[in-house]
Length: 255
Image 1 (cartoon, helix red, strand yellow):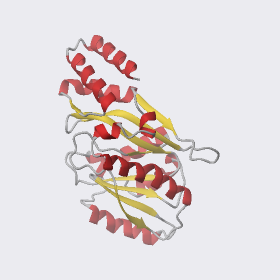
Image 2 (cartoon, helix red, strand yellow; image 1 turned 30 degrees about the vertical axis):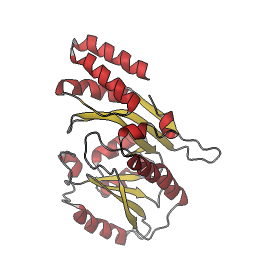
Image 3 (cartoon, one colour; image 1 turned 90 degrees about the horizontal axis):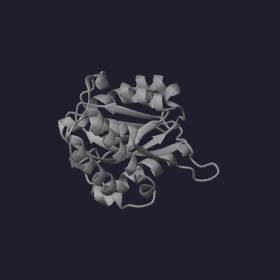
């Protein structure tokens, strides 16, 4: 994978006739191998975005017969344009447990207007809507998580593909860009590691289980094992360098 990244950056240097690519190559390779974040310039932004899309490491989880084959992990070099910082980031994709991404105007330069057409100004506003939804749907059950930029909901009562679930996602005011990407990739992706350069990013903090519906054991087990536990492990590690040395799944996802 590192060889591929080097080759990509070499081609990019020729295509753009840009002097910044050599410096970017050195920073990128060091970050991919050590987990260390690095600063990038405005001139380097376009190259980093293309690199992030083209070079990703994915691992499917198959824990034997009857295992959760719908789970996938992805590691990529994530550039954060708001902090001009990049570092390797980890994501979990689930094909069957629906996730809702509710963006709120509570973060710093974190969302576009199209992502927040709902009009909620804070968590309290969303909760008023959410409580009404739960009263109208006695079969609903969600695990709710606070995030630095809003709310993350995992549906505990349904198993569904992103396409089949899209009407519910829209009705619940999930980020339309997230809905579209989930349908396109046929997975509900969730970020498991802090955004580069974002201070005190706890990623997702469990609040509570809401709704009186029946919790499906598979949904609960997959969410706690492949979402909650890994976020806790990354947060407990304390630094990108320590995360890079966690081993296990993280070794499989090394570039």
